[in-house]
Length: 145
Image (cartoon, rainbow, N blue to C red; front, side, top):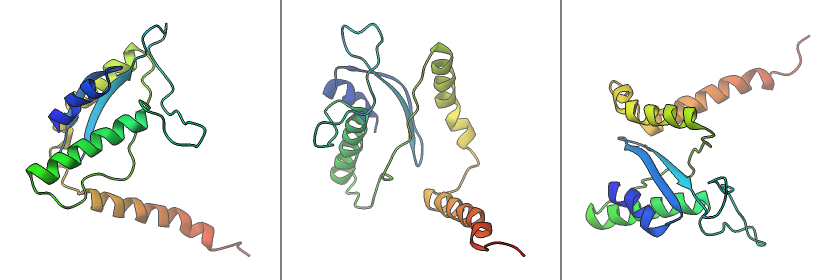
């Protein structure tokens, strides 16, 4: 995982890699999309071409590349055959220095918060599904009276 994260900087020289943390069932990382010559060092996170396909160097392409690189290495080096990644990813735009410092702190402290947490991804998804069902149940009862 570490090699794949660091390798992103080689594959995409227009990004800057900042803090990251690999956890037992997920990872956190901060990357900066930089375009030389712009006053503001940010580009749209998602760019589509005329066909609706993601353009090279969008955030989705960078994340997809990371996932593909990790999967490829796991299949070869660990002979891993099961799924590795969830289908999507969570992103957040960091807008200023305060948010950057907070995000870096969150990433650095994540392992200490992880201790004692034993839920697997599947268990977490089951809990989320149960909560969605509970919220939907009153809607399915129909009008009262």
